[in-house]
Length: 34
Image 1 (cartoon, helix red, strand yellow):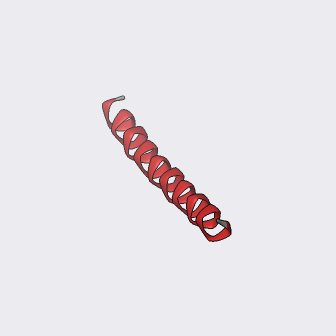
Image 2 (cartoon, rainbow, N blue to C red; image 1 turned 90 degrees about the vertical axis):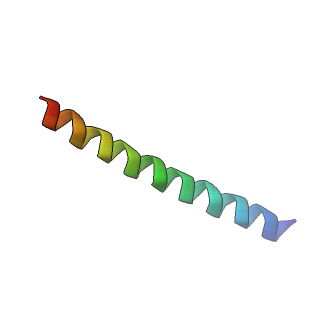
């Protein structure tokens, strides 16, 4: 169970990073539009 918990945390961190990357991409597009 302990290992499973660690994996879950790792997955969440990866997901968060992906969201951040997507956010930056969107911001870049918005800047170009402006």
